[in-house]
Length: 451
Image (tube, rainbow, N blue to C red; front, top):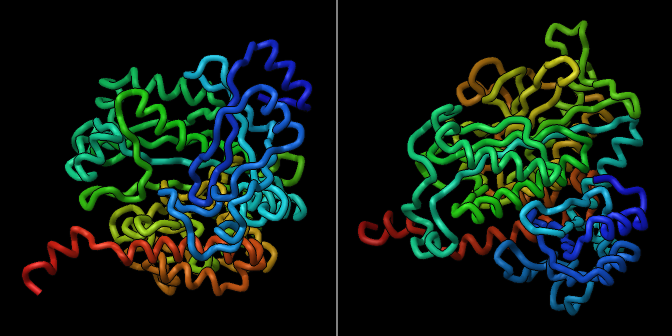
């Protein structure tokens, strides 16, 4: 939906007899935090913004308080942080009668650490450089015949997948479960998150959804909302969905690939296309990819932000291990896709668990930096990047290693601002410290008796 003013929107609320109003923001991990408000509070929030406890930026995905952040903590008193609502995000919720949803972002001194505002700043930079940015996200997610209660009771082990076997692109599976696929497509269409492609991937109960491309901020909003509402849809259907990067030792991980193209500002001309180039790639696109590849090891936590994301980065499991690129090569970290007007860069390193705003900011900002520096691409990989990465930089293998590199990167501070780098690095350091205190099943099985 598009509204030019708050007054136009409130008239819509009256015409549609809207009775319920939801507002929310996305936190540092990409989790949607929000609430219902009454009509008076809703109108006030639309016109003047509203206060949201800054703990949303001060706790992790399990609501545990960070002990090392400046933006939020006991020292702030967990005061209200200002939030602005964005009319461009208005949606009616198809399974909640007479209900609208609006997404917001943090403002004031909190804007520097807000994921959505971070992406908006990078988008503004692209505009200043003469570019419009188009993007698309595609996600793999597993479905299970489980509930939140049953999954916890099982300790997340021996879960019953929605379907058995390794059935990639299966017409059998999508035919047998056609009603579920249709309902998912219709739900996302009603939420203004149109799905361009939907199919089974290789693995038991795994589905891949390619969201239709859009301008940058809309694409990010769609990605973030898709993950939230896909999980809601699954649980309302008696299932559970996970976007973990890798939930099983035995099947491939789950990707969240990021597609980006640059257009000449206001014209719609794809600046990545060069009909005279043997591979169809313009110098602008090559500089863009060069920046993405060169800075990938320095911004890796923005893409792979969880402990689990690094489980996916192993040879032969469809996730890159080096900062590589290639043309139509699905083993490389960056895949250049020459497709005429649809020519684009695909950031294949992305896992499904990444925060869409932060991951898109990293993928775009590093590419723009490559254009600014007029960087030349390293040699591209032909064949398997696992077997022959050439002289490509190896990517950090753990969140701790990646975070240390990110925190010390002067280029990252220039691109994203020192407050964001400091805050985000602190949250990733916290994640690693929690992990290192944990005794895993692997530890027990390997060391309990024999060592």
